[in-house]
Image (cartoon, rainbow, N blue to C red; front, side, top):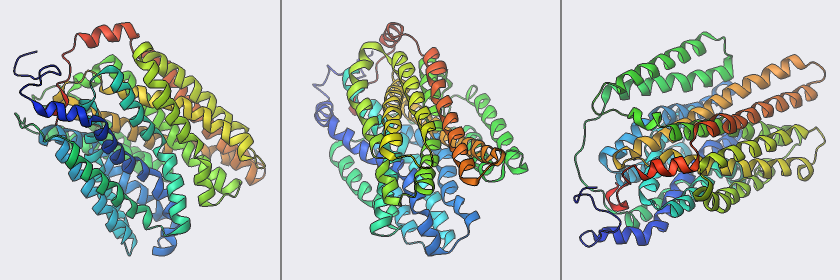
Length: 497
């Protein structure tokens, strides 16, 4: 490492390094608050949708756009958001993302008609795409010591993995005792805490050489991801044989392929291909995508089961999910930080995949007269333990050994795989559910329950593939340690935007 690059030991002329080291856990808290706002939004609004529909008077076939508007903007702009953080400073994009996310949330809460609410949700997606990769990149560049990094990513993984369940709970509470609009207004609280924390604890961005933005790559991947996300969303409503579904998916895949070609030829790519070509990182990203497939599907169909089959209220449904985030937090913050530095991600991904698959298969015990404590609770706990192992170790691995200038792009890749996985899971498992119900026969209640079981089986297969595919791709711990030791370490935290 050249003398121009400060190291952890060389702090005499870089006092900001000491400040960052003193405040690194406070920075983690700030990043966690921001991440919580983003992941909560994936489910908290779903709980508020029926009340919003009654209040604003939009039709059933329009309701999906409240979700789709957000996912289209968020999923398609993540890579751009990550690169903007690399170019303009992650602290800057972090704060802008938080402020914009809160502002568009307020606009959504004040909406007087369907169009205003959809526009606000799209705005949330835009600023969320700026915020999410900046948060993960800041975490990546703040924690470089392996043991501290394992602890920090355990906390971050717990938030990322349990946020959806927490959103169901918070959405149920707010809808039950206030109004659906507070499911959007609550983001202001997160934003205020996050912005104040960022201004107080995060160092100022270091100004350096700023490469040009890859405009062609940005255009191809943004439109390509829009096509893929919209295609899966449309498949959920109109089926896989629908012309719009086919055209959207084919166009999206073609543009993503073109993006890969562009990135291999430009001097300043939006996503340097070395990031995803790395075997360990590729295996971790696949794990994150597969967990997204399973998790989004589980929350969707388990919510239906609790609400429609067991007749739980919105608040009761939210409370019913509570053991799962606790289980995820336990695995991510207590088990993974202790084991990851010792055994490496390969063992944890395999173990987590098998445990999560076993937990999801426990949902096959659900029946029309099942009790929550006897049937749902054990499945939630076991599934949460497995997912906690996967998410925290995969996120750590996906961003380990990344050069400072690539941290935003690598972090955006994590968010993109998670979002695309969620879109695929929701559409694919919804289609599987609908087909299973249609072809089951018998009384409608039994057919619906059969559909839930088929969807749960699909989710179990997805996380089992984490053990098989990702567990095979990621190198053994000794090999990874040797490789990482040969990679120039990420500069000290204050040098990272």
